[in-house]
Amino acid sequence: MKNFFSLLLLCCTISTAGFSQSDDSTQSAHRGKARVELSGPRFGISVITGDDAKDVRDELDIAPVMLQFGWQYEIQFVSEKEDFTILSEFIPLVGGVEQGVFLPSLSGLIGYRSNSGFEFGFGPNLSITGAALVIAAGKNLQTSSLNFPLNFALVFAKGGVRASVLIGVSTIE
Image 1 (cartoon, helix red, strand yellow):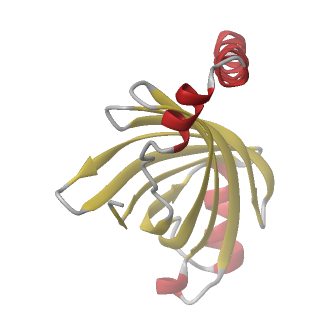
Image 2 (cartoon, helix red, strand yellow):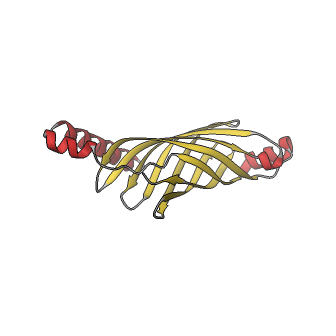
Image 3 (cartoon, rainbow, N blue to C red):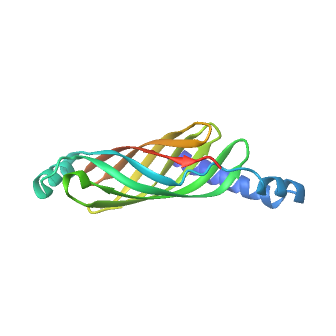
């Protein structure tokens, strides 16, 4: 994990240095390039494990498997036209509505997306059980006019691991 943080910092430093030292024509080319924008609705399913699963069964009288609904907000802050994008994502979700409960969560991830659509990110997750670490990976599937981001996330909390599979949709600009 330490190597990943070092690589991420190195990529950000190199990209920032490259932008600041480029001539006007290079900067104009960077400003005009297209970016993949994947902000939009998300829905999927989550499975709660460990003591947290026992708690939702006993205290809330619900199953530890639930639907999730939410929205992903994305900010791209480093984008290399042909190679990769470094971005941050904020993902508020609501789980359990099909079981008559409102279980909100909020994840904030710093991530990497390759030009092939593979993405990886990590960051904090806040929910009613407290703060935890979320690690997510996925792939953006494209049609001629739509993006379908498909992501798998693991939330490592004190009371157990939560696993989620989410899919979204956004238009290609």
